[in-house]
Length: 189
Length: 189
Image (cartoon, rainbow over all chains, first blue to last red):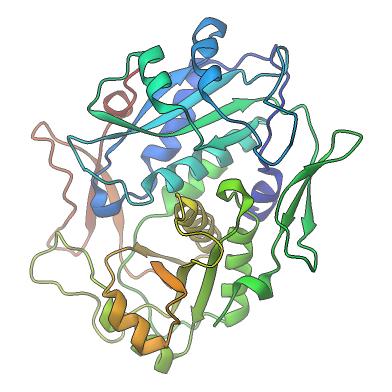
């Protein structure tokens, strides 16, 4: 059931870093994005993969993690992602990418969830640093970084309270709580 | 398997219009989007539903269909969508919507596919006309229209040929062919 998969597909930011993800697994995930919809079928998205510690360490410093959690700048060594899929837009194909990267990212994350993996769609990227680190040519616009690994935290959905605050928080046991708006709040007609 | 669902989730543009889709079904689909990721968990997306012929007829004229197919301006009466989910962005929550609407649209379309439905993510919208027709307040930015129904056409995936042409086409039997780039063409590192 797709609903179960979507419920299981939470944003995870701490991982069993020692659990490897093979490049072939990343390729299978990108294949799900490849087979997903694209505006005007232009398919301007390209992908850069990373699943080796040395290459992962080039990517990690350019990502911002969980902005609402004060005093936490991201996963510590041992809890970092095991792999990344970087989604870039090929400006020689299109100059804007509509929401293609959202469609692609969701396909990939659902595929990862089905494989017992998890992760986080990261748009808060220090792009020029990442570009230099991986020598990404100027032809490509950096859109999203998908951080992947075997999740090492519990994430639970909460109702948004009467104050309307949607900030996620982490409790004293390290459980990550994510307030979601109700269906009646988001269907307006 | 998510791969099977993604393969089945093609863009359909002709439907058995007489097959009703209930409002509760649309609500279940929006719930999948509700439970999906959102940048900074802001959840700025709102939804407008339509599943009645009279209301559907207010939406249809403002949509552009299958730009690559010359001489076809969209489905004829009897083959039009049975329902729509309009994704709008609430500018009182955020001014830009990142790729949240792509994530939401993919969750909805996969849910629809699982229910034996199908449809098309439409970004080519005559927005001001649609805004007037449905009296959508200026606070909301119109992002996507998801057209939904029971598909009445066959869509097959093809390889992109050596000329690189990604335009879909319809053959003499009405089968819709969609060229997709190869995995090796889209993974660049």
